[in-house]
Length: 281
Image (cartoon, rainbow, N blue to C red; front, side, top):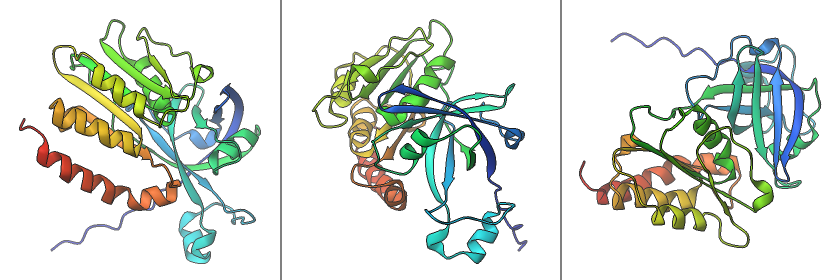
């Protein structure tokens, strides 16, 4: 039997901070550019994402930056930590990559970095990944998410042709977190206030009168409300799996490292439970 060729290690992209902007009290924009983006592209999916590499505090790496060398020569606790962020915009003409960060004060890793980022600072990242873009053949579109899904939802809405039928629900902390989106779709901004995260989203989708025809749905955010909406859409509404992009971007009580370690088992368990109850296509 022929052996598969060894998988070529992926090389991180290297870019520099061009500018930053505070969009809302809890959303920070960082725009990256530079020659290191010459072979980067993110123009096929509206949920493209990159994995930013952060070195642990006090750790520096030899140049040129080489992940294989780092893994071979550094203890595991000194390897870069990754944080995943959606591509809010990609400008191939100017080679500028726009990322939006949800801020939680001094909590976390990427948010505090984004608040402090200065022009000229080097950023390394892997990617892009991504799998979703609104299907032009769908009769209508459903987009649902919390703050973490807002960049992908905004980019998806901006990609829709004028006159497309779409319903978009975004849950945010309050009115001060609303953003301008360049789309003729009226986004329903759900202000969370003191309510449990995701509760308003589940209520809104459950109350929605579904238009006729085939829906193409995008539902992402905190894992628990995503689980509820997956049951609502797959089991109660009978949306085929191939017409549904749905996943927990994060999970309450877990950082990204912990969530990514358990995400596959979580999703497999939920899928097994709900697919068994889903109506036949």
